[in-house]
Image (cartoon, rainbow, N blue to C red):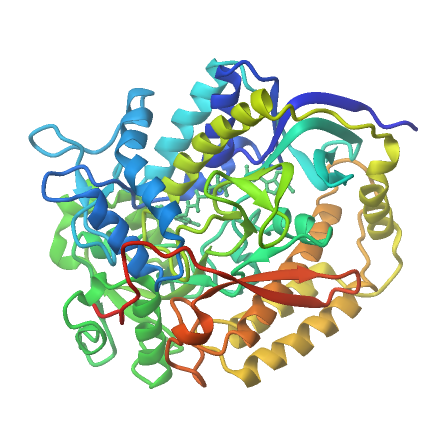
Length: 572
Ligand SMILES: Cc1cc2nc3c(=O)[nH]c(=O)nc-3n(C[C@H](O)[C@H](O)[C@H](O)COP(=O)(O)OP(=O)(O)OC[C@H]3O[C@@H](n4cnc5c(N)ncnc54)[C@H](O)[C@@H]3O)c2cc1C
């Protein structure tokens, strides 16, 4: 049967904040744009963001201070030109989304309220209670709709069309029917989100399987800084469901089994509001040294009881609800149990500061763009500060949308000759997985992947644990060849989708592990117990990693764009 080929100026993959923001700009500039998404847009992980979005709005704050905090937080790995662009546009981004209808929480004087967040020198996170992401996503989705953006929900994108050195569309199938289609486009933008599902304890939506990254990597294109995975300090014990940093921003205290406020040992000045990498390591250390709480002694307390019912219900109602539902504890009356949870991916598809994807250290890949969590611009370097990511997704989504429109007008991006064969790879992948008659189960392989990634490539890493994980990944890849799915039908075949997603998880996990083995230093979220210090002489560099046909990873390094902030030792 022949595959339909549809044509658009621009195809955007992903309908979170980044995808929706870009689509709206493109539509307003008269471009024929479609958004493909495997979920209903409002189920994108952006909607789960709780705590806030940063912008230097108050008189006591400044753009330069926001930039400094971001660069220091990144352990000096962020590119300072990108940081400058994002921080200087943050106030405008807040006004832009507010005028579209996003209702932010207010001060008694009627100004936009701002709460303190980790690693920030001023209260800078604007918020809508603790449902900030949902408010922003509903607003931008609604407005994109109003402007007539076409959304194709529950379409799974399985490949890019990469031919003659340009990207010219994507191959996808409708989840409802498994029917494939080719979406040819003069420009493609990926906004496919993060990938923390590779870890057992994580805060991410089930959909955060990093598809976009390995789709790109399988064409021999690079990924940047993949070893940097952020562990958020406060996930609910056992599940990893997020308790936003807003909890500490509002005054939450961390206590060990002796009732000690242990952060005074690790960050005497900033205490609980030190950046995430530091707080996560402190919590994990307390647990490893036997001062954990709970039945398995694998958690510490987050105490909010002193805030009182009124403040908790006004500022943190969602968190209270989550802790009640998933832990059976009421934070108004008693401390809750938390531990570090895999949360955010600093690494991703390398782009220049305008969202144009790089095909190697120097050259851009015509027709291809990325923004939001799947992209590595890099504004977060080795460690992202809380409330900078929703900002990145919204600002860079919007900005990249405009850059694509400019490029379409100036550079004359056009259609190339293609035929149905561009979908061969996707069809083969689907067919092999559906008909394979092996003995391995995706759910079991995935559980082993997540467990081993958490143990061997988690908060603390060593050469030994990482090499163990390298071997584990090889084993899992071999076993995945013998996988079998039970559902052979074409209707809503979620078994098939999970198998495809698991393939992606295996591939990008290899990038995380290989990057981490080679980076023999500790920087930001990447902590090597055998190399506990930062080593600027050898590693003040971005990792650029390429995968060959056999799945082997080759690493290169590129310079960090420095600026007015000289690398210093990080103290909080
Ligand atoms: C629980 C939680 C709380 C957070 N809180 C905050 C916060 O308070 N402040 C902050 O700054 N950041 C926060 N973050 C991080 C932030 O929310 C995300 O980094 C950001 O929203 C990502 O937006 P995005 O548009 O890049 O991707 P997402 O919102 O994750 O959207 C990804 C999109 O890609 C689509 N997609 C993926 N793969 C495919 C495929 N193969 N085919 C088709 N479609 C595909 C999905 O359907 C989805 O629409 C939080 C994250 C989590 C998990």
